[in-house]
Image (tube, rainbow, N blue to C red):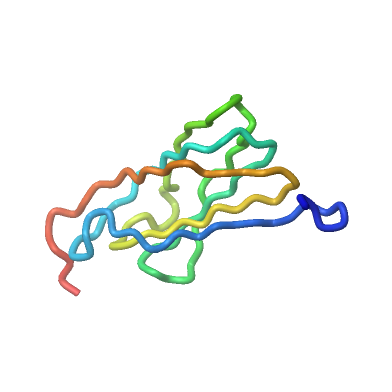
Length: 117
């Protein structure tokens, strides 16, 4: 079903760690572009840098703004950590209707010199 005795279900998906600039380089993460299906729910997105447990929030997005597919940009907040070797994402929804992410692209600036760790 789509509800738990009439109460909305919280669901989420967490990605693996991605190293867009390569493991030898740090990257400055700029934005995440997503493509989703139309849904009555709001997508909450957060990210994790370098495998740590610290979870940084991105903007929430209402997935019912357009019929069909929704393409949108989520910028990394300048007041949160947005530089590292790897990044992972967590997408979550609390609701009673289906939701789906079809595609995601990370935009970043790679560091020019190798990490000296």
